[in-house]
View (cartoon, rainbow, N blue to C red):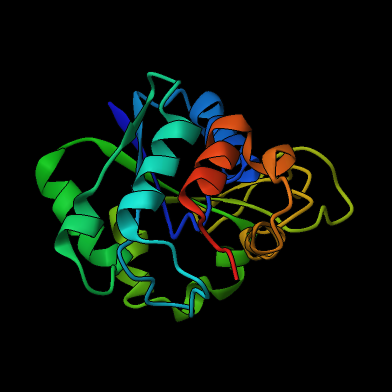
Length: 192
């Protein structure tokens, strides 16, 4: 059995997140993928952080239609800063013997070496990452380090930019899909 793990602030989740996790779920034939919104990100300041319950609900809208994806509140229930190494330790206990794949975006890949106990994370799972830019060659590549890379086209907008648009009352469904955009509007998330 193989399980994907896709964590993040998801403030808000967007179609780039969905595309990334779906790409690796398909490519690796993952049995399931856990989508885990963080309670409080340890690695960055998340401006205008929507309440955890709202981010969890938006993840349910974004990923919940695919039966391969499970939305987990484990980091939200733990509260405080969410360190990936702690989450992986718990998942190792919950799913003994399963191969774990940690899926991250290109922005997280650039700073991964600074993550808390990065070497321990690599010992517990296989890292799967999109590259920010395609460097000369095309196609998917795997480095000797055991990290699985995917040269997918970068998503054209970030969660920060989506929050900025939502703060102005603009429609963000082009980047979030209908359900998440409607939820943001109905809840008044990110409004100035």
